[in-house]
Image 1 (tube, helix red, strand yellow):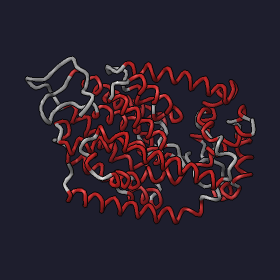
Image 2: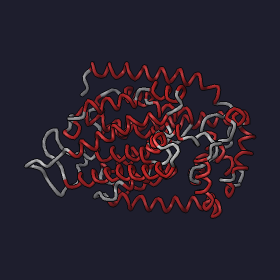
Image 3: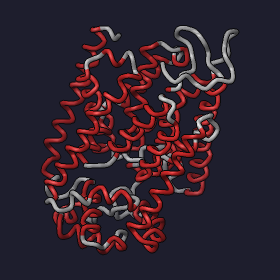
Image 4: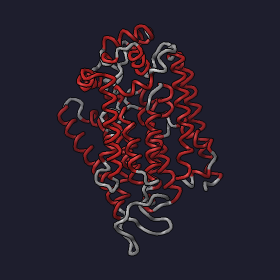
Length: 423
């Protein structure tokens, strides 16, 4: 159980961050009715399907026409439209919101996101015994104090939904329902760049049924995508995504907003694309390989003792952090899924497990940096280089990999067992 003094410090810190977010939200609210939030892309997709033009989902001219009708002021202010560049199957989620006006649809989606957030602690509490002793209000403060979650809510993004799916997948894997967990991850393919690396890290683990469930749902999702967008839409999608990702006309065309390895390496090799690409490939491969090795190590090694074992949580959170860093496209709101690794790390630190004992203070510093909202605001608004926010996350991942490497079998250790299913 957390000491009351520790809880008071956490509450004070989290409230300070929440108040900062509230101030920022009030200042930004005037942009919502005119269509500045990212929710515009989903609303546009829903409108296109509602009009029966599903085969033109990736027609940039039709998207521009829709946005000129519903949010003309945002195009003037932004200088361009926000193109819908997600897989077609996700657009079905927003068809029920299309009949509403823009602001009403935005508020409905915000309510859905908040409802999803509220449910997450109830799914996790049985698996995090120490954090389960703190009041639920502290969980909710921790959510709203995490700037990526706040931004995902403000922008009307779908990152909260992906956080929920990762949470459910984690719970099912802890329960030994690996095929179901894999299927749930398959539903997260609307952000495939934040799911595929995680699944790839499982290839060398003992959890093959996760891959089976994932591939099964992926096939279903692919079929739905073809049905929604048509064969021509599916064939046009890769080129459309590449164009909108690299086109300087769009909000995410600048790598200064990309908070991952790709964004950091661009700062090192801004004018030499081949060096940037090669370095990104090598480092990404190393990080994913390390995550896969930790899954494999957890399969064969369990250090016994009251406070020392290689827990299931450890490879899971390492893979999630590595996934965020190696993903080709990662914006601030995408970091909302890191709330789950932060919870798992906090539980491990409070539990004083062996794998984090040496680096525990450095890990706390890294988590504190990720939770310090002024860093995000200062890097975005003053320096316009958000990619440097990724440095604490890289530091955290390296700490975790080093911590995993130092665990070795003790004389009473057990080999040939999978990682324990409960803490």
